[in-house]
Image 1: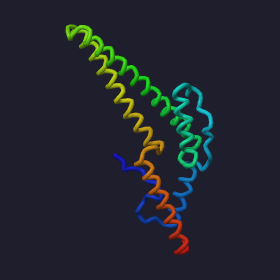
Image 2: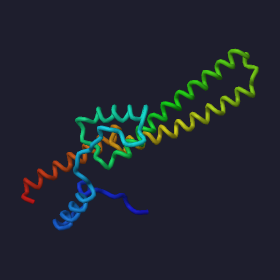
Image 3: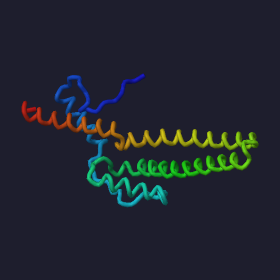
Image 4: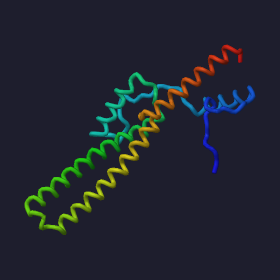
Length: 170
C-alpha cells in the first residue's frame, strides 16, 4: 500500500532547493488560485437544495474555502442535505402512522406493525448512510471543525515557512 500524499508544506523531510522549487511549481499547477463564482446554484440544484446552496454561499462570503472546481461537489452536498430533509419527513410520517395504528387497534395488528417497523428501519438505515455521506462531503469541502482546523494549521505553517525564508535569506 502506498504512503499518504503530502503537500510540500506538510513534509518534514529535508529537500534540496531544486526539489523544493520543483515541488512548489508542481503544486501551483494543480492548486488553482481563483475566485469562485458561487452566486447561482449549478444546474440540477433546485428547490430545497438551492436554498441550502444560497445559505452556504452566504455563510462563506468572508471565508476563502472554495473555487470553481468545487461547484459540483457543493451541489452534491446541497442535494444530499435536501434528500436528508425529505427522508426525515417520511420517517416522521411513518412513525406517526405506526403510533396511530397502535392507538386505534390497541396493539392487535402485530403483522401490520412489523411491516411498518421494517419500513421505518429501512428508511432509518438509508438516512444514516446519507448522513455519513453528508459528513464526509462536509469534511472534504472544509465545512467541519476538523477540516477547518487542518486548513488553518496548513496556512499557519506556510506563513511560518515564508517568515523563516525571509529571516534566513532562502
